[in-house]
Length: 474
Ligand SMILES: Cc1cc2nc3c(=O)[nH]c(=O)nc-3n(C[C@H](O)[C@H](O)[C@H](O)COP(=O)(O)O)c2cc1C
Image (cartoon, rainbow, N blue to C red; front, side, top):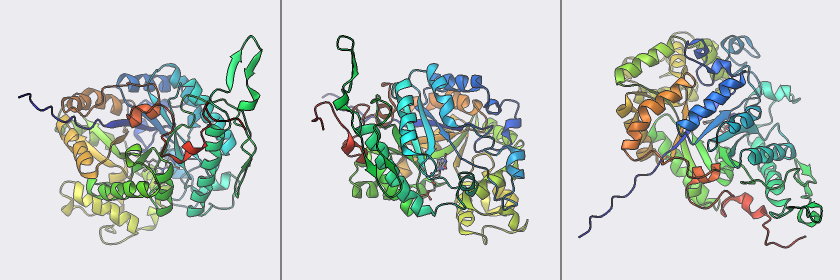
C-alpha cells in the first residue's frame, strides 16, 4: 500500500515592517553602532535594504507613515521629546523611495501607507498606477485614516475629523479610487498602432463622473491599466468602523493583540465579518505584528535585547505612546502601578504583558517599566531567543491565533532582518513553513498564493468596477 502523503504545513507570509524615518518602533536605536536606518535620508540605505530583503526572500517591505509630529507627551503640542529622540520624525514621503528600490529588485513587494483623510483619490490613483507600472505589479497600499492631531492642523483643519466619519470618507475615497483604476480604461485601450498612428483607442477610455458627499471627480485616471490595476490593499482597522471597512476592502490585515489568545478572538471575528461583507475569508490574509530578536542561542538573543534596550530613548517612546493613545504619560505619578489603575488601554497592555513577560508577578508596572516594555517594539509582541524558541513562538501565533503570517519589525535595520535570515529562516525551512520563494512577480499573487492572477478577486468590492476587454463600449 502506498504511504499516505503528509499534508503540507501552511507557508507563512513574512513581511518586513519599516518606516522612512531614522527609526520606526524603537526610538533611540539610531545611536546603535550597527544601525543603518539613521541613514534613511541617503538613497544607498534604501537600495541596500531592498536588496537584502529580496535576497532574504521577504514577501515585501511595508513602509508605515504618519503626517505630523507626536506632540501629546508633556504637551499639549510639545515637539521636544519626539524631535530630540527622532521618534518617527523627521519622516520622508514613502512613495519617493520606491522606484529606486524597485530598480535593484525583481520580486520584492512594496507596501506604502497613504491616508484617505489627507490625500485626493484622483492624485493617489495616479501615483499608485504609476508605481504599479514601474514595479511591474509589486505595490500595495496600506489604507489609513490617520490619527495625529498635529497632522490635521497642518493640513488646514482646526481639529481631526471624528474617528468614524474618517472611515465614511475612506469608504467613498475607495469607491472613487476603484472607479478610476478599474473602470476608466478598458483593458485593451492602449494599442500603440504605428500603422494608424493611434496610441489609445478613444472609445475605450471613459469619464467616471463621480459626484458624492466628499469627493467629485470627472476622470479618467491619467494612467492606463497597470499589471494589478488596484494596488494590493492592506489595512489595520481595529475599531467597529475600522473593522467593517477593513473586512470589505483589505486583502491583508495587520492585527493588534499582544498574545495569540487575544489575537485569535480578533481574527475569528474578522473572518466572520468578512463573510457578512460578501468576502471569501481566504482572500483576506491576517498578519500579526511582532518584533523578532534572534541569535544562535536564547542567551545571545537576550543579551542582544538588553544591548538594544541600553540605547532606547524612553522619552521618545513616551512621545510615540502619546500619539497612538492620546494619553500623556507625564500626567501619571512615577510609582503608580498600571496593573491596578490608569486608563483602560494601558491596563489591558499590562495584563497582556503579565501573561508573557517572565516573572511578571514580581514586576510593578510603573510608568518607567511600561515605557521600557514599549521601547523596542511599541505595542507589538516580541519573540526573543534562539531559532527554536522564536520559531516555537511564531508557530503558536499561527496555531492559536490562526494568522497567515507576520509583519516583522526591527530594532536595528537591516541588522534585525539579517538576523532573521541567518538564524530563523533555516529553522522555518526545516519545519516546512517557509515559502518556496517568489513564484510570481506581483504582490497580489505572492501574498494570496491562490493562483488567480494579479487582479482583484471576484469577491472584492473593487472588482465590480473593472472594465475588461470583452465588455461593451459606452
Ligand atoms: C501594524 C500596524 C500598522 C499601522 N500603520 C499605520 C501607519 O503607518 N499610519 C497610520 O496612520 N496608522 C497606522 N496604523 C493604525 C491603523 O491604521 C488603525 O488606525 C489602528 O489600528 C486603529 O484602528 P481604528 O482606525 O479602527 O481605530 C497601523 C496599525 C497597525 C496595527
